[in-house]
Length: 157
Image 1 (cartoon, helix red, strand yellow):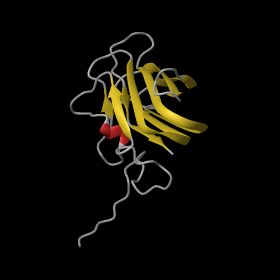
Image 2: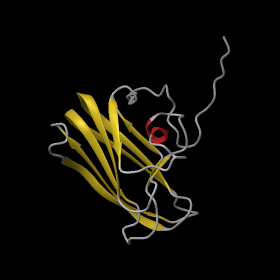
Image 3: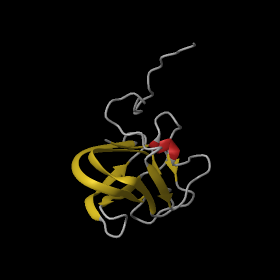
Image 4: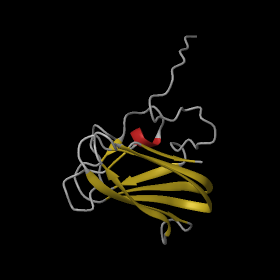
């Protein structure tokens, strides 16, 4: 057997980091769009790629539909913006009933200002029981500019 141990890159979550759920077998993902070079798997599966990116500007939605209701205690989001200054807003919400209704977890804005402020890391302790769907809505530029939404990482525990 050949084996090589490598350190995760900056901001990456190691596949073996305890506590994070392996989302691949647990969810069906719905997205409003994606750039073919930046698929959603890049944000959901450790070491799968660099990030997810929308195919066009404007508000985007990422929805995780869980096969079975889950208990979620922690959510981590990581966003990157290396190209343009902008104010992004995101809304994170969850559903206990398969997406018939949603409860807001939080809504937040963040100012990206490359080259200094290019990364936003949000790590939330939550206590959500019976989660059937988790939804992230991203408005990449609240002023209506041409920025495309992106997400470097979404992890749940």
